[in-house]
Length: 107
Image (cartoon, rainbow, N blue to C red; front, side):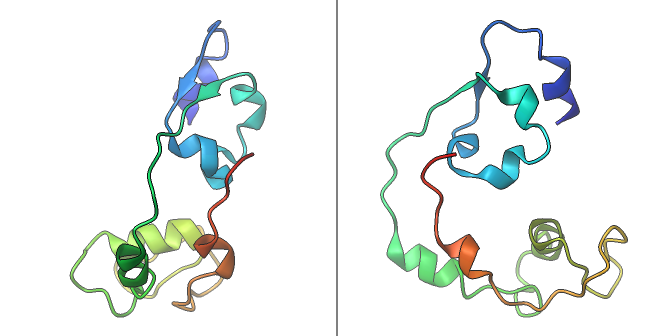
């Protein structure tokens, strides 16, 4: 995100497709990305994948070593253990937020 702040002088700015539908990705830098262009490619929902993905949790998904780090960052909470993120004071519940499951279609 620091790199984005350095690029504010650019005439045209193009951003990842995730920026078009994920307000959490641009949180805190809105003034720097105003006027930028982000394109979202057509990608239909894959319901079987959603069902699998939203069943994953930080306490039950030992297959992916990055998942606890992702969870702490995404939900701004901590998980006890060696990878505990000291930035967060709320303990992770392990439950997906309903807001996460509903995709945002525009900013």
